[in-house]
Length: 259
Ligand code: KIV
Ligand code: NA
Image: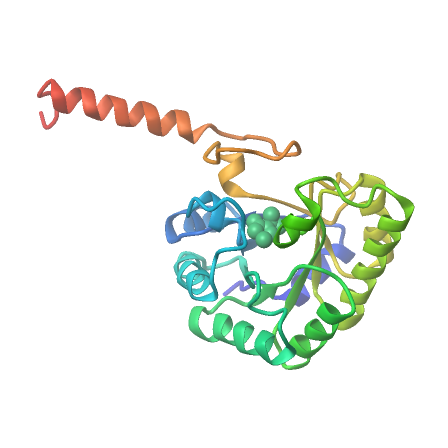
């Protein structure tokens, strides 16, 4: 079978083959994305907002992420499935991170985890996880688990901020991360990081020079309530579902369904 490994993902960067990534939160969506040929399916903690109605990603628990990740994994045959470690399931200590990441891999079958932030503490955690065989995707720039410090504003606009993000990305690479999400940073900064690193960058609101792109699937399908400025809506499922619901209601009320 054609299972995608993290080694394959790194090879795609060398071949300059763009890496297509989308988020999923349940079996049905995951299965559709996988059959459409998405390379990496991310069980992002954005599901706290788009699937569970929370205001931020902070409230979601590891048990809840495991519940969603298991459903996603059951729908995927080809894509590499990566799952976010939620807020405070990895920052406390390296042993907490090993415990949490281990539970995700053992209980759901996902192949990798993603953590937010750079160095030095997160990089040490990434080094330990990768040393024991748990692949890690990094995530720098706008990191939504730090929303109370950063808001949802673009990051890396000053030279000092840009240098900090570059150094975080390098530290994550040196710690063994197989890929790094670059969220909402200037495109030139993303291009610099992409050029410097031998591992792929997956951009979201970070310009077209990244090795791959990711968006929140609810955003591209028109199912989320608020979209960041860099989103492109590829379908309006809210409209489609509203129309279908109204048609069903009308037919039931008029006795046309069932015929
Ligand atoms: O939670 C999420 O969906 C993410 C992606 C936007 C990268 O972290
Ligand atoms: Na996330």
